Image 1 (cartoon, one colour):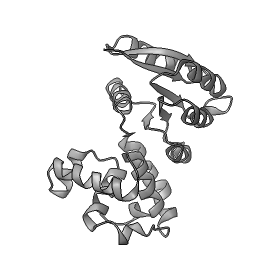
Image 2 (tube, helix red, strand yellow; image 1 turned 90 degrees about the vertical axis):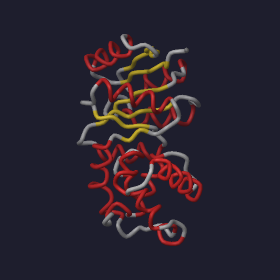
Image 3 (cartoon, one colour; image 1 turned 60 degrees about the vertical axis):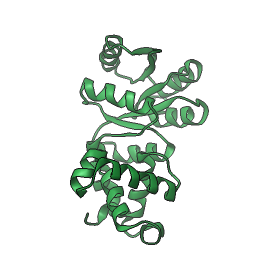
Image 4 (spheres, rainbow, N blue to C red; image 1 turned 135 degrees about the vertical axis):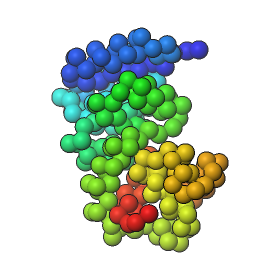
Length: 219
């Protein structure tokens, strides 16, 4: 099996070293390259075309957001995971709208990092529950009056419940437990929601939920 190629972009050399060792020592992964700044990261990613790029939000030379903007526009096939801290919520929301596939806190465990890379490489979105919770507190109150028409006219009440839980970072299994449904039923609801709203992953669904103000209401 071809290993997943990963690019590391962070201005902290020690942090990159920890991640490099993690991927080098884990079967099924390889480090394609590294960068300490946004401009360098974008140049190398466009040249190397890794499967997954881990980009720190806060870097010199444009930072991770500018690098992500270029990667997502020009490097088809490379999926982006943003590395963030609790103090950078507004940047996380911007990265969501750009099309980043995943978010990790910089204190994530090795298991969480590997799981995130596997998840986005498989074509799915990865929302860390802690990041989602912070986004809810930061952005949902500002958008509580900006409801999309679909919230009342297109989606059923149950589908709205599922969307709220997805945006809070719940897995399908956790949604099933919360709503007393089977996981297969949850998957069916998600397929319907994706089709109705024209999205294809949980990240875009979360963005719509924030912008519609759905997270500011009771479950």
